[in-house]
Length: 93
Image 1 (cartoon, rainbow, N blue to C red):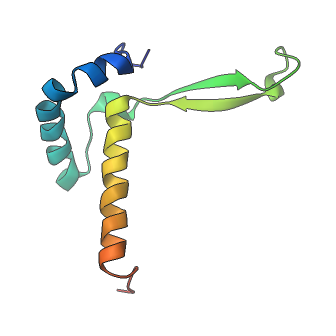
Image 2: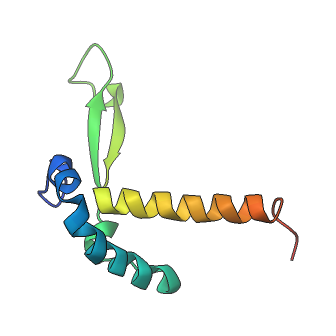
Image 3: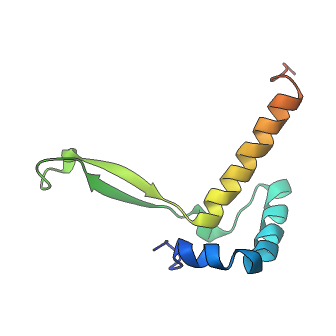
């Protein structure tokens, strides 16, 4: 279950219906650099490694983010990668 209460399977099954609204959000977010407030909230959950679960030092933090936020991150990564490939790397300004 996601932070927003929507299971990722539901998002996958409604992908066609969600494409347009998410596209609008992404296109508005791109030039401004602003995203919906809910997407800024992350849930950091401790996951126990091995042995003693009572020991707080025996856990690692796991960051749970919303699926639309993850998709936005992949779009940004793709744009940056494409820019670097098209320009043969990063040029000094």
